[in-house]
Length: 92
Image (tube, rainbow, N blue to C red; front, side):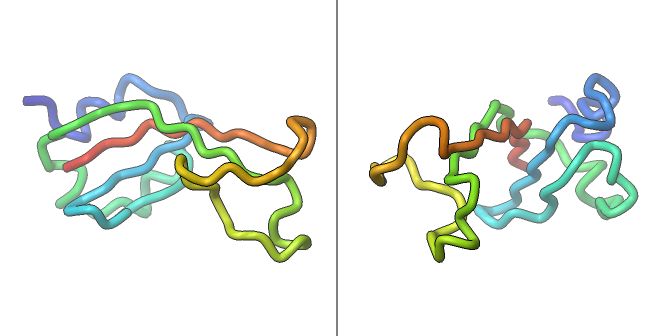
């Protein structure tokens, strides 16, 4: 098995990262913000790795909309109103 610490050596500081433990997000941010990740998570073995897109309306806060969109929701937005972020999701 690969440890989180080993995997993080292969990505760069501006890459977005989401670490999930038991269904709870324990870290969400940029690889460059690793100082915020507790050592116990860095030494944990990776159970699953995948890319996870997050798509939402650009002005979701101003419009009073929900934060990130869920896959089963299909709101009426034009494509130009949306933004996408891509995370490396690591489950431990």
